Image (cartoon, rainbow, N blue to C red; front, side, top):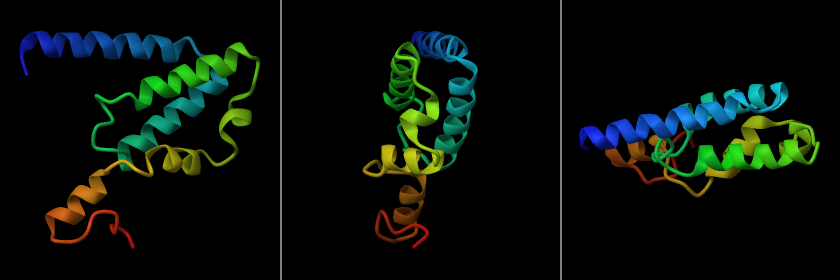
Length: 108
């Protein structure tokens, strides 16, 4: 990874965070909780992948239509996040494989 790649990545992250700050307060709170949850259990490619920007896109559209955030995702934020990453390899899966187990069996 070159210095230019690092600079570009930071620029994209700052732009992403500016979009999050522009969301209505209820959306912002839920997004931050989702982000924390996903960084703990989420997919391996979370920082560089399309998931977080996709959530912001979804939230921007919902806010523009005047919907409440829980109308979009339901009352169980963790279940919504789990559905988003259900087919993605997670850090738990990578750990399970590293100790000789099958992917997708972590915690089972």
